[in-house]
Image 1 (cartoon, rainbow, N blue to C red):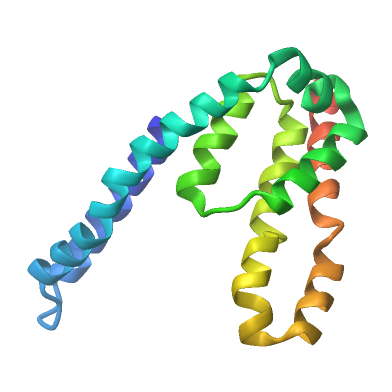
Image 2 (image 1 turned 90 degrees about the horizontal axis):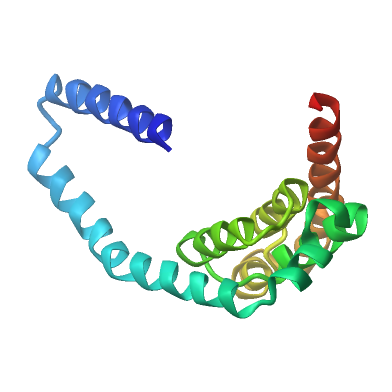
Length: 165
């Protein structure tokens, strides 16, 4: 977490420096725009984190570990892929929930499959944006081509874990 924060901080310093060298860039407008984007997150993020923690607390840990733990293998990876594909919401909802599930005992390969499916398949985004904007003809082809990515990423993560042991 510290590395990610440090990386983003270095990037920020670099772009501020580059922006200061240009006359057509207003620091005030950039800060105002950033604040406008940050404000909703300051309200949503704590609520999402609390909701995800309560959801994880409501799911029986033994049941969760049996279905999605490291020992669940390929079946758990497939289930996690399905859950990720139907998991609604953006990163403000999904990542706190993923953190809570991972803390509750979901295996790393299963978590990789869940997050990959959420990123690539996301049926709620397909229904709300992709089909209405691009059309069903494109959407079904993209989904068909992408369907194997989540389980495959979970299996690759499982293989990588076994190879490092």
